[in-house]
Amino acid sequence: MNYIENVATTFEKFTKYLEKERSKDLKTIGRITNGLEKWLTFEFYLWLLMENEGMKPGHGSEETTDVGLEYRVLINREKTKTGKPKKKQCDIFIRSSKGFHYVEIKAPINNGNCSKVLASAVNDLRYMKKIKQQEDPSTGNLIVFGIGFDDEDWKNAKNKITNDSGLPCANGSKKRELISNIRWGVWTKEYR
Image 1 (cartoon, rainbow, N blue to C red):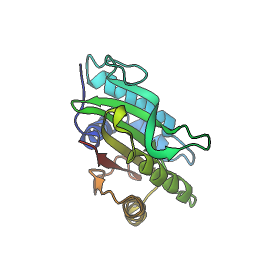
Image 2: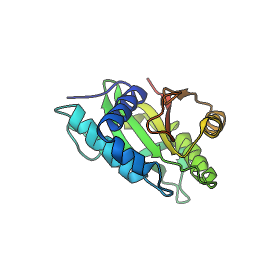
Image 3: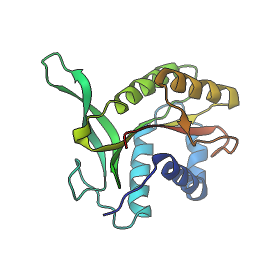
Image 4: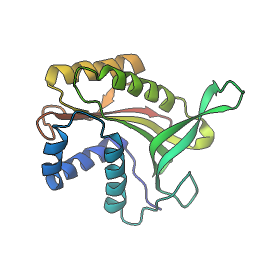
């Protein structure tokens, strides 16, 4: 059974792969002005399978699954109007030695209207902080992959997420940027 220990350092390895192997694509992506979250999610998922030989894809947190897409996790202290337990669909789940990493990915584009995506990111992170123990969480994570951010705008975006969520940004691009205007950060709620 294969697993990873830390989402932030794993995503950093993934961004180095993108920079080395897909730099031409990243230059193109850096110029777009609309969503790319699903592309990034799928690219990260395929990279996890490629990089971690023997990692088994699947759906749900079955014993034989190491990584999967679009999984609905149960959330603590939240119920729907009908009284059923609240669920949150996460983009990726990845096995760790202590359970599962649940990951939400957001890709805001700094086009003057990224505040909605940043607010959605904070809301997703709020759910990643409330995963029920029966889901066997190791961590709940938010990855933000920002396009078109200069230093000041990225600092403000990171501060908004950090201040609103109460979690620090782990790793993430500092001065080294992937391709000029692409930045990233990872916020993690540790369960174990």
